[in-house]
Length: 487
Image (tube, rainbow, N blue to C red; front, side, top):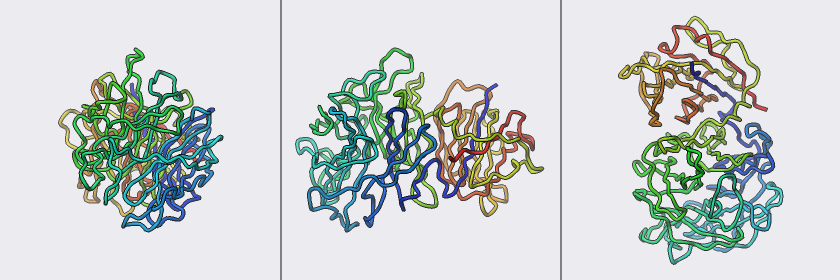
């Protein structure tokens, strides 16, 4: 019998995994792993009036518990004029990724706004914590890309990988890069980057731009490059494909992460037919990036939003390339380190788990859910109710195909469906495994270890129960509970 795991994480400021206490705001995150240590980078704000001007780093031995080093690099205007966009009077910088240069140093790329355009700049390090900026500037190549527009052009968020990737490789040269760019043909206003910047380097610091990859179909509105990686085929043949995670949605222009794939690094890149939106935002999360784990396994980092503060580094995800050819995000087994002491499971007469979850610490529940019959109404879908401050509840439930719905349930027991997530799963049995990560107002739901929603709900009380269709007033006998390990 399969097990459904409900992991409920509750903590101050609703952080899913890590938020720096040394900065006021943080945004995009990227990661690098070396000698078993995780380096989690986050874009932050020190002196600007609108967006980021620096980045910080936190380190971890297990990818779940972090020591914060605070701000480790502050951008500078290398080629004035800088920061003259109408909505901000000050300098601002964008974020990137980390790779090893040919000379052995580590390189991070960052970008700066320059009066209607951007340039990619670099900083180098010997230890991945202390960074020194260099004067190398990589600007848009006028052969293939716009160099200036009144509303700005994009040239930022570079991600790199070996030009001839193989299983178990991360470093190496020559090296390709992909980044957010504004290719020619966008018209006079810029910011219509329907494809990606693409280029090559032979040392990690000096880059040659190449023509933009074709996108089939083109993204309708815009795309921000999260990362492009070579993903190994699930059949163990050693073959693979290039997978691009792009911000933006051609259907509704939302800030979601969509997937395009290609057989060659230069493209063309084709929209993934199944599970095209690999990380639906629902105003809850954004900007997924690949990175390689301790064993060079492919992992994903992204940011989650909360009501208090800016964003938080979400628990890392594994990458699943299914037998159906679809890329999905998945549970990373090392997240088991988030479990602390196991507690006995009990419920109150009205079905809520007792004791109430300590919202400053959090809890982990595991159990089994049976999927409902096809066509069953929402009230019969199995899942969980999370009580909100004020009396309503957030419903997280599954239908017969293990699609997830998030609904708001009023005190009058009326449900208003807010969002639905469909990973187009097949071959499911009568029961499924589920993990639900929950911290005050943030949750993540996994079905058979595959990620469904990342969702920001209204502030909650810590009272959690199974739906009536999942249990007859009391927890199933295989439900287990742990406190959450925050240190």
